[in-house]
Length: 289
Image (cartoon, rainbow, N blue to C red; front, side, top):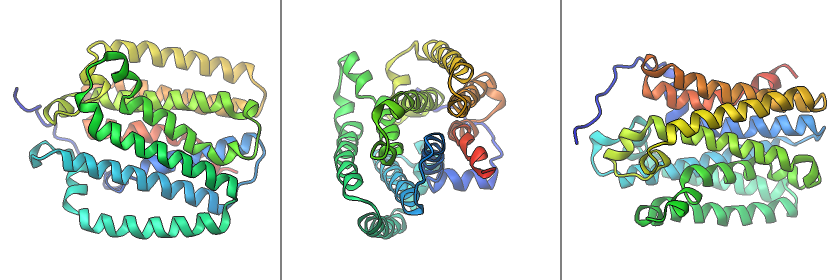
């Protein structure tokens, strides 16, 4: 099977660094954490935002480093894999430093309930790492492949981590539906990325939803449109403050669908970074508060 042809793509330097340094996902997490705290009128500390940002950065950096190590041939690596493989020693130093700072801030500023739930979630993340980088490759059962796919697990874990602090401050009835809705949005984000990177994953012998399910493209189109319909209905029917949540979800999902319909007019890297940037929508609202 020949390698996929590389599209000549002019990449803005800001987008390149955001992706290479794994800054896109942490910004998504703190943006949606702020949005839900704003809706529920909860005041979160800078330490809580910092711990979430750093924790997501640590997890994503480790995940990408493990991906890079599993791809033996340099020519098959995407820019983020090349970066993490080439500067692995420097990244290990930063990982250790950030982990030390995050741990110190967490134990000093966060209450015991948050630490307890955070520890439990850390074990689940460790389980995700084992599944994604070891067990998934030898899995054949189609249902298990879907339920334990990186895309599904990331959606669940990312949403759980984003709303972890809020879950200790408000009853489940106030944030449960929002957490589920955000998990679906994160799943759609990951699934679209897997579709756009399908050729690369096949050559790298990586398992993803796109490499396992041939009809993923059609399912994602209809699934995203259904999500847009629910988000639009929620923005009209929900209480005033929740309109912001469903409105941001609608714009984010609409951005994912727009990236798909742009087809070859947008390069692979731009789509990959753009898929995360469209989830930065709450950040715009935050900047006006």
